[in-house]
Each structure stands twice: as C-alpha cells, then as structure tokens.
Image (cartoon, rainbow, N blue to C red; front, top):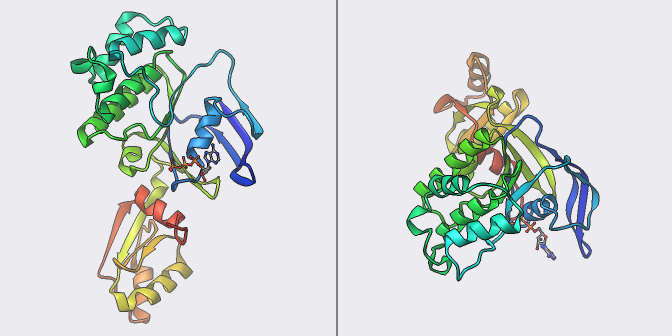
Length: 289
Ligand SMILES: Nc1ncnc2c1ncn2[C@@H]1O[C@H](COP(=O)(O)OP(=O)(O)OP(=O)(O)O)[C@@H](O)[C@H]1O
C-alpha cells in the first residue's frame, strides 16, 4: 500500500493536503489527530470507499483489505454467527469454520454469538464487526476508532488479540483512536495529523524519544523555559503544572549551572519516556479546541 501526495476536497473545503504514507517495516500504525482533521477521510481512501481525490493510492496485486470505518454495517436482525457466515460469502472468502470459531474465541463474542445483533451493546457490536473485518483474511486492516463503546478490560483484550493476529497472520494494521493509551499499547509507530497533513511520524520503540522532565515553580517557569529553549530541544511545556520536557539529557550538571546563574532551581528532574499525550499536546498547542 502506498499513498502519494493525496489531496481531498469536499466542495471548496480542502480536508487532506499532500498526504504521503506507507507502512514500510511497521506492523501496527496508530493514527491520531483532533476531530475533523481528516482521519476517516484518509481511511476511506484506503478502503476505496472514496475514489475522487488528487494524488495516487496504490495497492499490491492480490492484496485484500479488511476495515471497520464509522459505525459497523451488520445485519441487526440476524445472529452474530449468521453475520460472520454471510460476510464470508459476500467477501468471496474461503476461510474455514475453524477460522471463524477462532475469531469468535479470540474476540470473546462466544457467549452471545447465537443472539440477534439488535440485542448487542455497542461494544459487543464493535467486537463482532472487527471479526467481520477479518473474514477475508486481509493483509491490511483499517480500523477507525475500533474500541469505541468497549469497557477498559474489553478494549485491552481486543487490542492484544489484534496484536497477536497481526503477528500470526502477518496483517498490517492502521488504527485511529482518540484513546492514546490504546495506541500506546499496541502500535509500533504513530502518525499525527494536523491541518489535513501528517505533521509527525513517531517510532514508538525509538529510544531517542526519551525525555528529561523538569518541574519549576510558577514564578520561575518563564525564565526556565527561555533558558531550556535556548539550550535544548523542548518537547513540551505546561505552565499550569510547571513541567518542561526536553530531549533526553545524559547529564544535568551543565544546565543546572546555567539555571542557577539566573536564580532558577528545578523542584525535580527525571528521565521519562515521552508519552503520546506529551506529543499530542505539543503538536496541537494553539490549535482550536
Ligand atoms: N461527506 C462529506 N461531505 C462534506 N464534508 C465532509 C464529509 N465527510 C467529512 N467531511 C468534513 O471533512 C473533515 C474531515 O472529516 P473526517 O471525518 O475525515 O475527520 P476525522 O479526523 O475522522 O474526525 P473524527 O476524529 O471526529 O472522527 C471535517 O471537516 C468534516 O466535516
């Protein structure tokens, strides 16, 4: 799958600007961005639901895509089991019953698989819809906020199952979510969208994404931020909680000296892994809520 220089307009509104994307070596990629930034639109180009755009989207020959985008399309008056079977047919898939049963077990939908989908809760429907998305044994799986409506335990189970299936069946997954902890749990890479474009492409295993966090009292915060910005790459800063994070420092002595010359003393310093939350707020600093 390769996306090159994609632009998408809805009428006069440009929603996507010069998007380039490839999975490359990564297996599970997270897609993050504020409401309306264009995540769903990008995913709909990938599953060929949207075909009018500028730029190119290419897919390897003989490759299948599974997807769950927006609300699940299921036969509500039929059972979960019926849905899996009928989508096997609709998708022209040759998966055997053992594969279906494996998905039923894996996504924890066995207790209600013979009940009509109309009676399912939202989370139950989402789990079934993810299993349906896997009915054609896809090489790529596109999931738009798949854990919506799931309780925390259910979300973790589903995400871990997706991670296992991704490895076992060699499925590359693109997953959008506003739940940053979901993305942190399973993704090996995260792309951030802002203003219709990808502004950050972030390797979740990269040790250079460690940060050194400083904490300052409110009256020292501005001087500290000035000094740190002059000397290091500031990853995020939050005046309310007094925290400034900079790209990881092996040694603090030099900066401590500089700070003390200005009569600025950190309350504490610690090395942490940069969180998606840090990144998210940093990228969206100044953006409209
Ligand atoms: N069919 C459509 N016609 C016109 N405008 C649309 C259409 N679909 C989406 N939009 C607009 O395109 C922009 C991007 O929408 P999109 O659904 O891709 O965002 P998103 O990042 O998925 O948002 P969310 O996080 O809320 O799901 C929004 O401004 C939206 O109003």
